[in-house]
Image 1 (cartoon, rainbow, N blue to C red):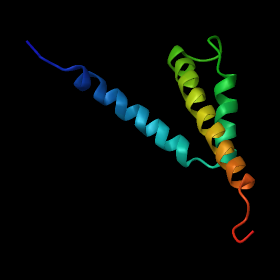
Image 2: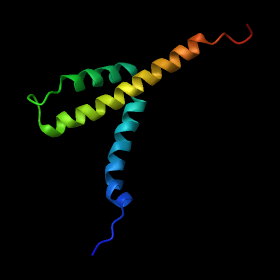
Image 3: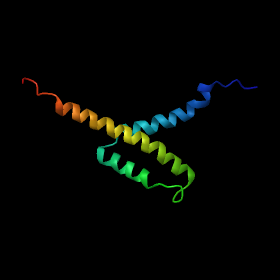
Image 4: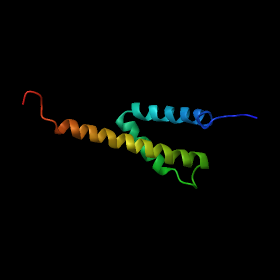
Length: 84
């Protein structure tokens, strides 16, 4: 009988999620916007179920990344210039 732990069961999936997240975080802004737009176009009737589900997961992470970048840009632009 196998005594696989929950961490072992999730490890290979976690690797896929980490790869997706890494790809999203290094993606240029214009590609990130295009990715979000592509995810929004996927519906349950125009693609396979796995593509549809992947689009939902990818969209959530891509939107989070985009919003984080916007917050950082706003924060940087709101800071006074050094020496002022």
